[in-house]
Length: 110
Length: 114
Image 1 (cartoon, rainbow over the protein chains, first blue to last red):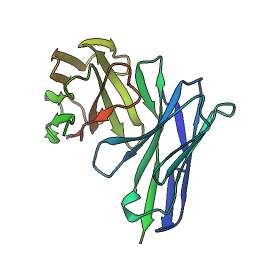
Image 2: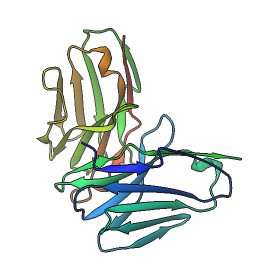
Image 3: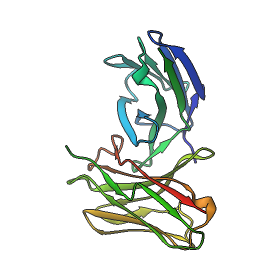
């Protein structure tokens, strides 16, 4: 079963614009992860935010977490064509396995 | 450069044939996952192992799928007999003890069953 659900399913923007993706989850978590998947490739871990954190930055990525609303957002600032990929949120269930949402497909055009 | 290696990268097979996918986890990682990705279902967890022992394979169709870890450097996922609905990309991922959230994924095996 899916734990996280991303919104929107697809997003198209121009280079230089910001991209915001949202994730909602169902059960209590210890942390939440965002992963990226380039077309035809495996997933790559981007960032982890713990349940006691509200915001975290990594380069052009900013992740927020609202545990009261069971939601997270991923913001990519000043997007580039190379950011074109699918982005997934994931949580660890029962401390043992990552469960992924269906992802947001981001397309950045130059 | 440590990485998870999956073979083969692509496999086309006829319905009813046996398919074996292999995964070499990153050295020192004791947790291994198998996922299946399709457009309709997204990423589904099939099975995972810790220290080579299967912890959960409830996501796997038991009648035709089997997953094993013959040793710490090899995980296998077998489908017998294969069916067209098994067509998907199968990913293996590995993680260190206590760092399951930051799993490393292989490039996947794209399986097409005709």
